[in-house]
Structure formats: C-alpha cells, structure tokens
Amino acid sequence: MADVAFFNDADFEEYRKLIYGESGITFTATNRAILESRLKERLREKNLTSVKAYFEIISKDKEELKAFLDSITTNLTRFFRNQAHFDALEKFVTPELIKIKKASGNTTLKIWSAGCSTGEEPYTIAMLMSEILPPPWKFEVVASDISLKCLMTAKGGFYAENRIVGIPDNYLKKYFDKTEGGYKIHADIQSKIRFDYHNLKNDSGLRNMDLVFCRNVIIYFDEAAQTAVINRFWDSMANKSFLFIGHSESLFGMDTKFEFVKTEWATLYRKFI
Image (tube, helix red, strand yellow):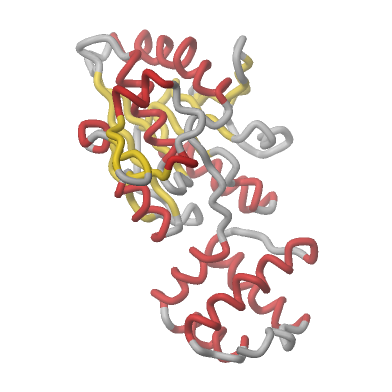
C-alpha cells in the first residue's frame, strides 16, 4: 500500500476535530506522527489508499469509528502500577471507607476502574481488596475502556510471562494458574469485575461509586475535556468517596469540587459534600 503521504494539514485538522468531538482525545502537531501511524494501519486493514475515503467511512460507520478510536489510544499498563497508590488504598482509603459506610449497614464497596486498558489495574484492585477486606465486607469493580480489543484481553484474564512483572509472588501463587506461555487469573477474581465499553466523553450511568481509579487517561485530553470528565466522575460518586488519578496528572486550577488529600503514601482526591 502507498504511504499516507497525502495526509495534509487540512486532513489532519478534519481528523483531529472528529477525534476530539467523539472522544475528547487531543492530537496536536507534536503527536501528529502517532495519528499518521495508526491511520496507515487502518487503511492497510481496509485495503484503502486515501485518508479522505477512510474519513468518509468513519463519519458514517459507527462500528468502524469505534475501531479507529480503539487504534489511536495508548494502552500502557501493568500490574501494581505506581505501588504508592495501592499502599494508600490499603492503609488509608479502605479503612476510611469502612468507617464511613459502617453506619449505613451497607458492606459493599463499589469501585470503578475507568480506562482499564487490558485489565491489569482492575485485577490488581480486586486481588488487593480480596486480601485486605475483613468479613462481612465485599466489593464489586466496574472496569471500562474505549478499546474493545483491550476489553477482550481483559475479560480473557490471560497474561504472557512478560506481563506479570510486578505481581508479588504470594499473589501470583494464590490468584493465578500457570498455563502454557503465561498465567490465567482465577475465576473467583474475574467474577468480581464487570468489564464494559465506555467512552469517557459520555455519562457512564454509574452512581454512588465509593472509589474511582482513572490514572494516566486525562493527560490525553485538553483542559475543557479534562474538566468535563472529572465533573462526570463527581456525578458518579457517593459522598465521602475517593478518586485516584495518575501521578503526573493534577486537578490543580481545574473548576472542580474535589478536595485534595495528601496521605503518607500518595496524593488523591475526595468528594465531600
């Protein structure tokens, strides 16, 4: 297939606007090469040579648009990524939530892993909560992503040997089975997680979540899209709930109601009305 050499400035602007309008993801001149690279892959798969022809397709075909948005997202993740967050979850957030919810008699913690990629984050959360929650406390996790391909990997629960780096040995022995070429997570952990397609540009429909993880996702959005996403999280969360974002992300200067919380282990945010 010919190179996408005719991806000119006008084409880039058309694609950039469509991507932003559909997902909130921002492409600028600095990451234009990433978009061009992913476009080449899609055109090759569709046996097309024209970016204009492909634009016409994704403007009308919602399924192909989903596949295109899937292709442009970056899905870098790993188990126990940023250990300090999980230390804070274990030693500060979970005890706080137990104290908060005890009076209501509700002993189930509702957790959302937004932008869950291939599942390492929600499985990490589920393993940790299985270890630290005392009876009769339970938990349930909703894990969402804009990438259908990533969600299929996550639902499968199989990870090659090079993907299990970071999992403590005791967790690996307790929650995974060694199989040919890698490890398969136990069904009881999988049963605690509901994987779901979701575009953060839209309302998730989730409500009264006690804990939201959305790490290293809003960094791809501009300020307006970031604020909209964060405020939708607010709407989805219970009072006195907690939000983790990436260590390189911040709500500083953003028009949001979340309170900044600094713990001994990591910083996070709290919804407090």
